Structures are given as structure tokens and as C-alpha cells.
Amino acid sequence: MVSQHSYAYARLRPLAVILSISSLSSVAYSSRDPNYKDALSKSITYFQGQRSGKLPSNQTIKWRSDSGLSDGSLENVDLVGGYYDAGDNIKFGLPMAFTTTMLAWSVLDFGQKMPNQVVDNVHEAIRWATDYLLKASAQLPHALYVQVGDPVADHKCWVRPEDMDTPRTVYKVTPSDPGSDVAGETAAALAASSRVFKHLDAHYSKTLLETAEKAFDFANRHRAKYSDSLHSAVCPFYCSYSGYLDELQWAAAWLYQATKNSSYLQYAISTAAENDCDTFSWDNKLPGTRVLLSQYTLVADGGDKSASRFGEEAKRYICSVLPNLQSTTVQYTPGGLMYKMNATNLQYVTTSTFLFSAYAKYLKTSKETFSCGSTVITPSLLRHHAKRQINYILGDNPKGMSYMVGYGEKYPQRIHHRGSSLPSLQQKSEPFACGDAFQSYYYTSEPNPNILIGAVVGGPNPDDEFYDDRDNYAQSEPATYINAPLVGSLAYLAASFRS
Ligand SMILES: *[C@@H]1O[C@H](CO)[C@@H](O)[C@H](O)[C@H]1NC(C)=O
Ligand SMILES: *[C@@H]1O[C@H](CO)[C@@H](O)[C@H](O)[C@H]1NC(C)=O
Ligand SMILES: *[C@@H]1O[C@H](CO)[C@@H](O)[C@H](O)[C@H]1NC(C)=O
Image (cartoon, rainbow, N blue to C red; front, side, top):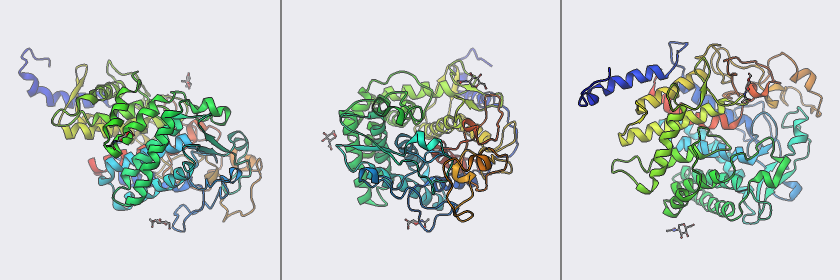
């Protein structure tokens, strides 16, 4: 189909696009699209199950109760609230802030496509985090609190968050023991959220923005990886592998979004974070910044030339993730799922799917296309890639199972999540002691008594296999940063493909 006549290019292009969609997306196992609306609503409900602190009376996940009500007291500060990161009972600041940034980006870009009830729930989920992040930032510029709970002691026990009695040790970064990654991500979360609340609660929004600027200044002024200051409190759990420049740049990008003050854009442009990267996660923000700032290069009048670097980097990112191209660097399973890592792989699927959805939107607005080698990239192709990945998660896969708890007919029953795996306080009021529950509730093939609705687990292995076992936490543990970007992607797909 290669034409000798260059004029034929424009005529043939639509056909070329259709062909590349089918060759880039692998086999589908189901002929029907999932119910994206149902999955969207569940994906945000999940966050209620992760809440720490005093729960409101309208909490719909009823098997959870108040927990961590004296968090912060060991240092005479108030750190009640926020989210547990995954299946255990620690409040880790870096993934919590990243989760918040991604929930904010989800509603900023795709909130108009969400039903009102869902938008309200996303706002509430963000505020649950930002109320906590404001408390954690109250001592700036002297200290930023970045974690509550001794992770080593916590991981030895299997108890409900409502029962925990291991030390709620408080960890902070300071000018002498800094952490630019966690402070930068906190700044990004607060700045992105200030945009979310701009027209809903102007006073709150202003507080978030002022605090974001303080956190950014602190991150920029005192530069270090937080894992070099906090060591075994954060490693190997959420060690900063990618360093802190990616977070400083990401924070500046969000502060530019929130303020339109060009000095933040200049900061992002001049931040030396130049290597290509196909992984977007709580650790590495490079692809996120690139896609976020590519908006300024993708506008009808050619955009802001000074930001063109991000446009080029974003395109290279897209070309490295799409399957079956010469530029592809990520792996796919035989069943067609993007595969980055053996632990909690679905987080990389939901983050990249979010970036594809956002980039498709920006590309569509600008009416541009570009190429990866000889493959023409259009918004429709990006959308189909995102759809294929999300459909896999929701059940269109070789095992025919959904990886979202409570969605579809077959989903994980033994997730690595304490609250879900143990009878609730209403069912059993006596507390569990540290090691009491392992035998009867952890190492048992019985399904979990409580359904953590909407939770997406780590997911299948490179052979599309999944072992539904609590002890197999690399596959069976859900996490807030898997779900947060999924909220945006599902809103986009729910609006693009009505089932
Ligand atoms: C639930 O209660 C909280 C606290 O009272 C309130 O801020 C929130 O708007 C309520 N949410 C809904 C969906 O009614
Ligand atoms: C923009 O931000 C810089 C750095 O924080 C600050 O010095 C400057 O005053 C700001 N400019 C405006 C117009 O707000
Ligand atoms: C992932 O697990 C497979 C076995 O299922 C192993 O061969 C491979 O080396 C692991 N990859 C990584 C990156 O750990």
C-alpha cells in the first residue's frame, strides 16, 4: 500500500490509521465493552476503604471504622486523617501525595465527563488527602511530616487499622534531613488540588496554593533524596529510586498550571531531567510532566516555543509505550497487557493509560497528529490503546477475570488487605493482637469477609496468570496509586465508548 505518489498520502492516511489500530492492539477476548460507568463509580468508592482518622456518618464502606485517632501525638502534632497506602496500616507521604495529584489531574481533565455523583466523590476523596497534607505542612519551612507508623513493626502484624497498636512513629524531613522528592510531590498535590477547588471553595484553594508554594520552596532550597535522610523508615517500601529532580520539575509544572506564573515554567524547562523514560509512577514523574506540559506546545497557534522540549519528550514517551513498534521499549504479556514489573504491575498500566487519555485529549484539541516511525498517531489510536488496557483489567483477558474487586462476575477474593481480610468491628468487637489473625484469616483459602469495592490489585504475572492468595502481595495487593489515575481514564472511556 506504499504509494509512489506523494499526493496519495493525505488520501490514504485514514486507512493507514485504521490498520495501525488493529495491528497495535492485540486480540480481544470478549466482544462486549465493559460497563465503564459502573467501574468508574466503584474506582472512586474504593478510597473510602483506605481512610484513616475519624470517618463521617455518610461513609458507605461500612465495615471500616475510626482509626489512627492519635496519629501525630508522639510529636505533639495533629496528623489524624489521610490514607493508608495499600493493604497495611502505614501512612506513607510520597505515594499519598502522588495519589492526590493524580486524583486532581483526573478531575481537572475529565471531570466534565463524570456523572455529578462521581465528581462529588472525587472532590471528597481529594479533600480527605489535602486536609491531611495541610496538617503535615503546618510546620513549614522548619519541617514537613511525611509518614506515620513504624513500617517494620507494622508489617509483622496482621490487624485491622482500627486495632493497631504498633508504634505510630512520626517521620519528617527538615532543612538538616531534607527530602526534595516527597516535598516536591506534596507541592504538586497541593497545587493541582488548589485548581480543583478554585471555584468550589476559593478560600481553601488559596490555602492549598500558598502551602504548595511553601513546600516547593522547601524542596528546592534543601535538596536531597528523602531516603538518604530517612533510610529504613521508607526503604525498601517507597525508596526514592529516581531521585528528586523529577519531583522538583513536576511540582513546578503543577505550580505553573495553578498560577500561570512563567517563572515556574522556566524552572521546569531548565531542570536537568533529560533522559527518556517509559515508566510513570509514585517514584518517577518524568513522563507525567512531559505530557502535562505538552499542552502548551499543542495549540492551534503553535504554542509556547520555549516548552517545545516537553512536546518532543511526550511524543517519544508515547512511541516507547505503544506495542509492536520499532520504538517500543515496554513489554506486553501474550494476552496484551503492558508489563513493567513483577510487583504491583497494574500501577504502570493505569498511569500510562491515564497519560494516553490526557495526551489524546490535548492532541485532539490541537488537531495535530505525529508519527512513531511510519505509524501515524492519532487521538483515536491513543484512545484504543487505553481502551484495550482498561478492558484487560476489567475482564477482557485470558483468565476472563476482572482485576477490580466487586466488578464483574469473577474477581480477586483473597486480596492482601487487612481490613478486607478480617471480620469488621461490628462482627467481632474484641481487638486482634499482632500475630493472632495470621493462622485463621491470612493463611486460609477462605475468601475475604469484606469486599473492598473498586480496589484494583497488583494483577497478573508476565504469563497472564494470577494467583489469588493474600500472601502473594505482588499480585493481590491493591494500592491508592493504582486507582487514582484509573479514575480519569475510566471517565474518558465512559464518555468515549457508551456501552
Ligand atoms: C459526607 O459527609 C462529609 C462530612 O460531613 C461532607 O463533607 C460530605 O459532603 C458528605 N458527602 C456526601 C456525598 O454527602
Ligand atoms: C512568580 O514566581 C516567582 C517565584 O516564586 C516570584 O518571585 C514572582 O514574584 C512571581 N510573579 C508573579 C507575577 O506573581
Ligand atoms: C519476574 O518474574 C519472572 C518469573 O515469573 C522472572 O523470570 C523475572 O526475572 C522477573 N522479573 C523481574 C524484573 O523481577
